[in-house]
Length: 182
Image 1 (cartoon, rainbow, N blue to C red):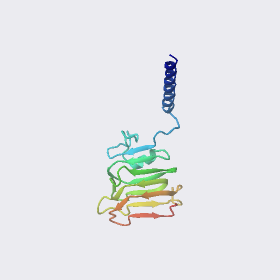
Image 2 (cartoon, rainbow, N blue to C red):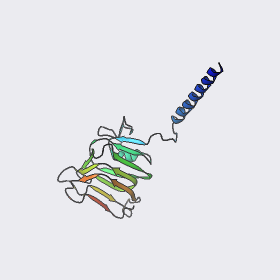
Image 3 (cartoon, helix red, strand yellow):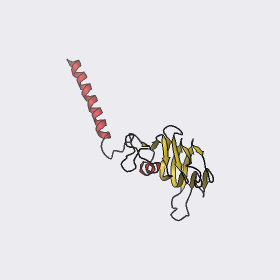
Image 4 (cartoon, rainbow, N blue to C red):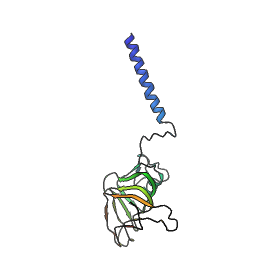
């Protein structure tokens, strides 16, 4: 009888501990980050999406405007048309990566990826190109605008890693200018 009582007490204690952890993690404003992974998909929505796997955003730019420092954005396979603006200040850094390397294709008829104000952003695993002949100059441009009108922020710690850059019909593929740091 004492053995059954002891097992029952252990069971209740375990249940109480598990319940406390679940309740503590579900309190709004809790500072514990269970998951700092967000999603972008061709069928996503920047207005009604929340960046979750079930309700992804549509654009990388919106993801960068919405995520916390230290997060990862996983971009699903597909073609993303329009300019990607790498912006935001991330002291711990953020990573924007293609879920399957080179299967997320970034296309635009002007500069595909720009970064004029940003810190601590890594872009990794994409296929990046102009959308066709007659496109504007540059595929990627990183430029520090300090000293320019509205150029209070600066560019540093921008990493472009393991991407395929091609089909620049009008000028350079990648241009880093005006003193971008680090």
